[in-house]
Length: 138
Image 1: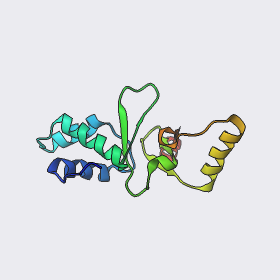
Image 2: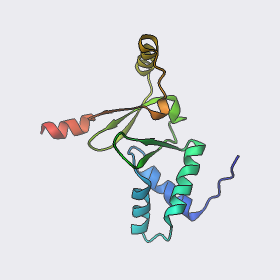
Image 3: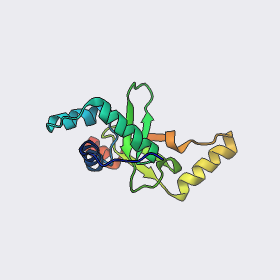
Image 4: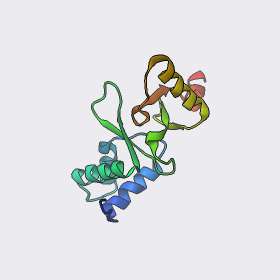
């Protein structure tokens, strides 16, 4: 088990993550944000901390189709994010944790009918959230 040191860089990164816990983000977005706050942090430190946080289960990492960058989302407070599915708003980027019996039934049905076992840590349903839908209807 790797020891986690409480450094200023890690504190700054965690602060950003907590403030943006319902959205996905890239390592570049974190790096740019921290630089704008006059942080002396380098890009390697950001990537190293993100990798460690993924290993510990604090962060969820995924790639969207047709995108080159990895996306991250803070998962503390939602247990192991690889144990449930997620949905993401295609407009605002907000991530929703899908934790209820309907999702479990859906996953079971996919397995039963198609022989497909869902990898929850890599499964994201893309749609438009109700707030963005309301804005589009206005």
